[in-house]
Length: 264
Ligand code: SF4
Ligand code: SF4
Ligand code: F3S
Picture 1 (cartoon, rainbow, N blue to C red):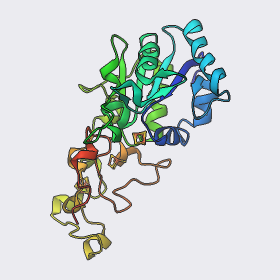
Picture 2 (picture 1 turned 30 degrees about the horizontal axis):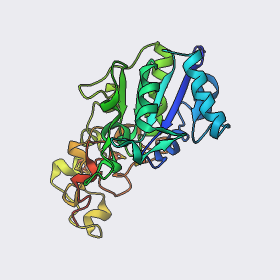
Picture 3 (picture 1 turned 180 degrees about the horizontal axis):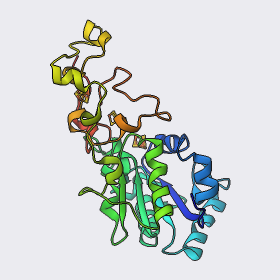
């Protein structure tokens, strides 16, 4: 791949668990170190930046001076409607997000928390958690849902922007079509069993040992859009259904409230 100028990236974390950052640093294709050292210039990240405290805050301000309209704003976590629930460096999550989003070339919402509200937004949503789209004015937003998203999907979105110099094609919800155009059910390795009417009825039955379809134990694959069945996790090794666990629909809106995850 042709080497291009490294694109500045600011990565903000709000109401999150850091699982999305943890996923990102495990990308195998492209490798995370290639992304960090050759594709992007990570100007601010609470997980990966060397500076902390005032120095980290100063890095963010410097980005606004040097790269206005040029940097990508990656966001992990939801934003509380009530400012008092989340303050970083003396500023509310909402205030920091709006300032950084308004001056970015694009916002990439990593994970179901930033894309949909996620776990903090689950009923009864005590903080009034909102997805980042609730606070964006004119800056384009790419939603990359999943709890967390697949590592190679996360880096793939950045690689696309840098390689082609434009945002990836998005679906009607704002997700990159390349990674969210299929349901898990469309590409599932257990699909032949679904079509044949062979189902796991409980987790320790003979059907489970045979690898039958997990629909009757709660699989949400038929209503979940994600790349797990095609790209798989951990560098293409496996994904929940292949490992015997029903899909819980972690890339879908309000999945925490749409349980129970398992029916037996
Ligand atoms: Fe954590 Fe999931 Fe939210 Fe990512 S989407 S920050 S993995 S709870
Ligand atoms: Fe569909 Fe789930 Fe059965 Fe796979 S395991 S075929 S995704 S219902
Ligand atoms: Fe999530 Fe379902 Fe994939 S639970 S990790 S979307 S298989």
